[in-house]
Image 1 (cartoon, rainbow, N blue to C red):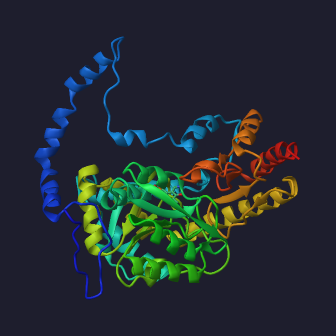
Image 2: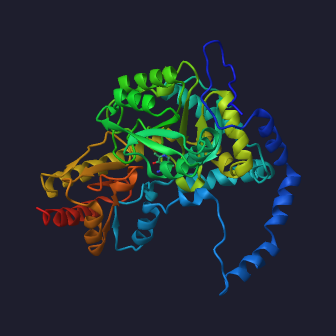
Length: 454
Ligand code: PMP
């Protein structure tokens, strides 16, 4: 079956999606009603658990699993995070926000008011699309900051922006399709897309973002190029930000080749200096670009509330696949965030986060320039959570990490941010999560170990 093309105005062509005709999606929608949930529950109930328990004995045989399981690897960061849970470890590994900035008292009040005013609604099932006032707030905020023209129907609430990436993988990718991404790129996006059997074409980047002639060249080389994944603001892992021209050009190239784009932007609100730049979406004339966002970095990641924004027809496809995944996001979490936004000034809160992270960035960059050997290069991000370190090509960052762990300090080696491997001479430093004295101490330890290589 050919992918369907739905007209969105005269010149519009829809981004390519997987081969799920409208009818089959309607069928899926119908199956996610109340009865089908009972049916699912019955299937995973007591009997199946007993069945699993029996198989755990001596006669256990490997179950046959889907082919996609061979594409899925454990996340290196999640593995390192297990080690860094020990309190003596100074960890630059995770992408964790500073927990002392979580607005706990304000959240307690928002929670209490939501339960008192509208407890029954807050604890009930709700729509897949998400809580309307929250979707409205997100649309207005994006329009104000990023030059978009969304309304609430352009927004789907997701379990973190991570879920948005997975849903997009399901909507767009067939086995053998190619995702074009920055080199390096966000590790868990690689995992999310890889589960759908795609390949990756890595596009080189410089201080201005993806190198556009390279992007165009690789689109021409990969006939099955289906999706471009980008993080233009304070990128994970490099901390780099695209300039205006790269944003405009990306939109033009996406239109020229009719390829969907996911612009992932979890860090854009955390700018320490310089001017806010518009989203690539603001240059999108055909409706090919989708934007993801999240409350994880400006509020708290524990709520797991994020979103995907885009043209209504393509958002609708995301809604349909989300129905099959989890029906909807947590109702009370969405209502609490919405209540918090109504009661408090989130800009003031974000300002506090920015000030703290800027200070930590300054300390980290200053320390690295003092204690790292001069052969080592690193970025000075204008915002976000990360700086990126490049060692001379003959030094392996995993080897450095091993020595650092002996001294109770951790970071993430850069190799796994390259979907096709290589570049083992790189690593990522997170500067948002540790207090200042530990940043100084930890980087001093890493610097000492690096000096032994020269
Ligand atoms: N995209 C990028 C680039 C990220 O760095 C992260 C998390 N660190 C996410 C998406 C997912 O964040 P969340 O699911 O918490 O919104």
